[in-house]
Image 1 (tube, rainbow, N blue to C red):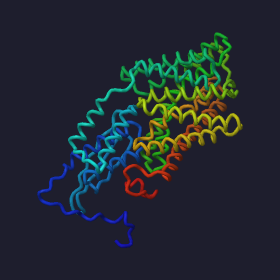
Image 2 (image 1 turned 180 degrees about the vertical axis):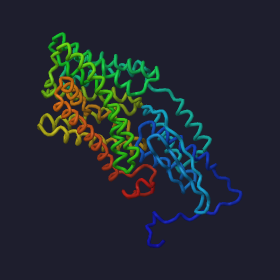
Image 3 (image 1 turned 45 degrees about the horizontal axis):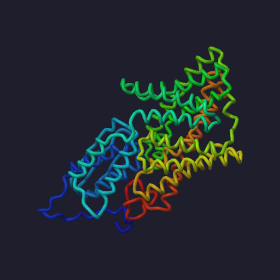
Image 4 (image 1 turned 135 degrees about the horizontal axis):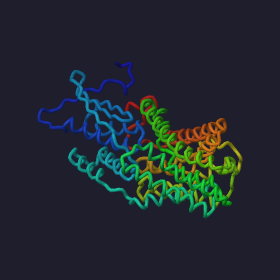
Amino acid sequence: MLRLPVGERPVPEAARKEDEAGPSVPRVLDLTLRIGELLLAGGEGAEDVEAAMFAICRSYGLDRVEPTVTFTLLSVTYQPSLVDDPITANRTVRRRGTDYTRLAAVYTLLADLNARAHEVTTEEAYRRLAEIRRNRHPYPGWVLTSAAGVLAGAASVLLGGGLTVFLVAALGAVLGDRLAWLCAGRGLPEFYQFLVAAMPPAAMGVLLTMLHADLRPSAVITGGLFALIPGRALVAAVQDGLTGFYITASARLLEVAYFFVAIVVGVLSVLYIAVQFDAQLNPEGALQAVERPVVQILASMVLCATFAILLQQSRATVLFATLNGGVAWVIYASIAVTAEGSTVMATAVAAGLVGLFGQLIARYEHTSSLPYVTAAIGPLLPGSATYFGVLAIAQNNLDQGFASLAKAAALALAIAIGVNLGGELARLFMQAPGAAAARRAAKRTRGF
């Protein structure tokens, strides 16, 4: 035992008085699972969910716990002593949603549970958890729909469009959002929601092409795809893979693949019909770089602000996410456009800065990094490469199409790895909130 590292030695059993009444073990485990469910359903990585479950159990005096986090199932096992039988509880995660205001409230509850200044009883924790679940979204439905339209319009301006392109792209995104809401109300799976949401922006671009308008139809279609590409899910999948949660990472990657296929099928259906009617879609239109620094920086910031609204972020975090996204676009454009460097490298560097700044401010505020990171990567999403890959396939240029889709996948992975690397660099500067000592990299997933 003396040769074992201190962190791996068995914990000595603390003697408990006969009249000492501790919290009910099943109730603590159930509270832990319910909080972990909200975190996982809100998009947090498996490592962060596991660390939160450890912290909750240890705050109530349960040290011998082993939480298990997968994509759809949470489990926690508590063993009172080395000779007692373990107690296991689990919970299935069935519903997922994006509400970062609720996620921030959960982190506030976690901070209070771990604070030494005051003690939060299980009854009070359950009451606050119920209030978090009943909390209404900060933005009504019409604001979300308007934000989706403005996001698409800002993305089209980012790619070289003007005022008319902005309005057409916004109209297509609004129609797609309403169709997706209609499908969701009918109980259709998310695959079909993404499919129908991708069709109106493609149809608006095709309409501009057939009217022979001197505009940029590619910018209209690409702008409508920015709000649909599941950037956060991809980042979480890569993060889970890099931190050793391979089952959860595989499930998340499969979910991203399904959503990506849905977007491709939706756009491809419209483009295939357009090709049959001899629509002269230009596959080289988006390759012409447009350099308008002031306009593009403002458009990228508007894109990030509307993206933050779609993610149901609190108003206090929208400003930082907007500034973080503006800085990311400046770094990306400086490398990819001004210096004519590699777009993949530019994307990775910009995403790394987004992850670093977001993780630093999140650790300073003792909250999740998602509100500061997810919206800020919006201008970096590979909407243009996705669209032109689909267009080439519709025009029967399979080699060019799959090459463009492979480039889109490379850009998406560059975003994910860059954000994760930025977060890991933040660990070198600031300690995680509530941690007594820095954890070694090999012990991180064990909760020490």
